[in-house]
Length: 337
Length: 101
Image (cartoon, rainbow over all chains, first blue to last red; front, side):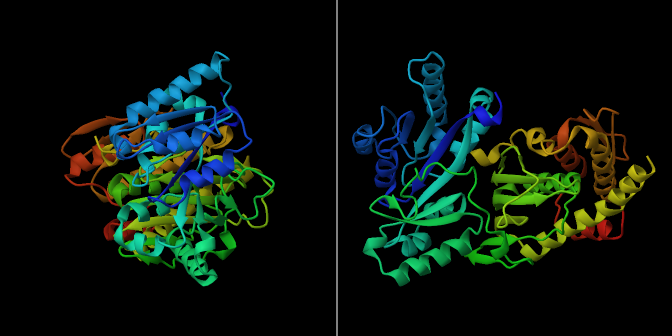
């Protein structure tokens, strides 16, 4: 099964009471073929009833928010859905996993990435995190779970914008962009995403349009406590073998400190590759068309904890620099042949 | 087991994913050379078979580890020198900056 035919999975999370279920109800209304897996905290599966009204199948994984202790349930739930799909009992267009308010999305991603069968049939298309416009500023300070969710998001949806001032929404948007510059940010009112009237906000491109031009060319950390988001400039085009050696070594030595890796890399053979990783979990690189959209400038963003970001940038440059003579040597050989 | 305790999932899938078939041999040679420089900084030797499937990491006391892929390479090298290899190690960056590769 090729990547293009895999069943997409959308992970929807957000802190307690941030509007996940409201967003899902609005997004799923009128759409068929979506299965929902709900990870409830505290064995109170009240959201199941709300979601059942707009989706034909809802599975509940109850009994705690720590997804890492319930991973096997997630595997079984996805395999059951796949079995029904392949037998024609219930055709499946996509799966939505709604996380509990305190859950860390990374074990969900790990569970899917590490199961050969699931990896073959499903792909995690994006992680959407709802952020409460009224309470998020204090939650991000008081609750590390809320911060972690923002860090691993592909799309951040600011909810309850009708209950907060425009200034408060703008300030929250700025803070979210500083914490996770790799994520797309949009706003929702009563579960309806602004600017998405004609389409399902859970659909869309595999990754939000990179905001490459807005990223600083040189490392310019935006931080929350000891967490830093840094845009690295390795110079373009990038030497892929040297980059792989560098990233692999970094994740092996300091994987717990690397919360997020996301980038659009221009390689020295003229191709472009999108990379996406959450902690130790690297997704397969995605080849992009030779002609990119104007806003898809090459970029590389790492979100790290407790790491010297200047030295991180120096390290990437050193690895790329060490590969340059070899790259030039290869080019000369290709010219001769 | 906590997710953080697992090693990088399927390293070969992501690290080789962007290589075109024509450039695989060349890229593998460049990767081998760079790994040789990195491990050489710590007194280790690195070599691989022509197909690049398996590699040998050895120290100067004659200890040898047979490895597959980068993840096992870092693990083996860390065991041989008694600590993890760190890409932010100033000594390594200095060596790479000297054109060691």
